[in-house]
Image (cartoon, rainbow, N blue to C red; front, top):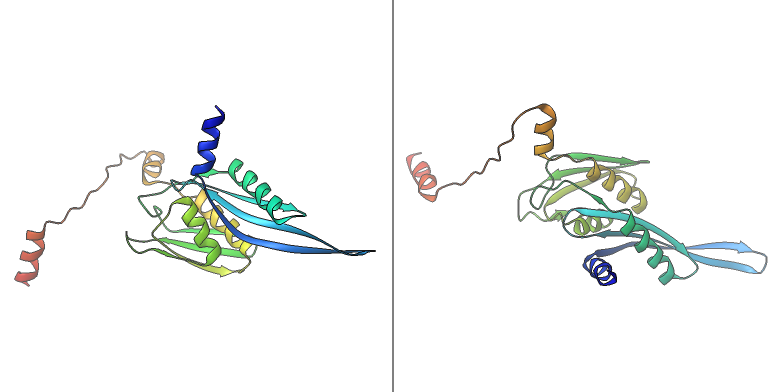
Length: 181
């Protein structure tokens, strides 16, 4: 059983977003401590956030990774993108996320890009509105991702039957349509 836990931890994608040094002034001088903001994901739709604080950078990162891996939640994906437009809000930070076609890539700020890569989302356009603080950006991004709903779930709630549309364009049809115009 210990081997299975090790394999799971090795599969996880860990992205360090920010390491912050904090100084506390005391009688003898300054005492430094560090905080680390980290996102952990499996690349297949599970992602979590961790914030670790310690007197050493390595220990702060370890604590953050531990916290992030225990707080991982499943998000709804559709292929390599998200199923619909989503807005995430946390504090004064807002993030507008739009799905994109395959091959579009991740168009996002650094902190948001780390979250998308850890979650396994490869095609998305993101606009950050309001706060540019990495803490607020990451938390608002995760808020928006956690609130995503799949097309199947929406159809089920509405009492409709969901049939996946597969659009395959035949090269012959496309050529005949362009020649006739």
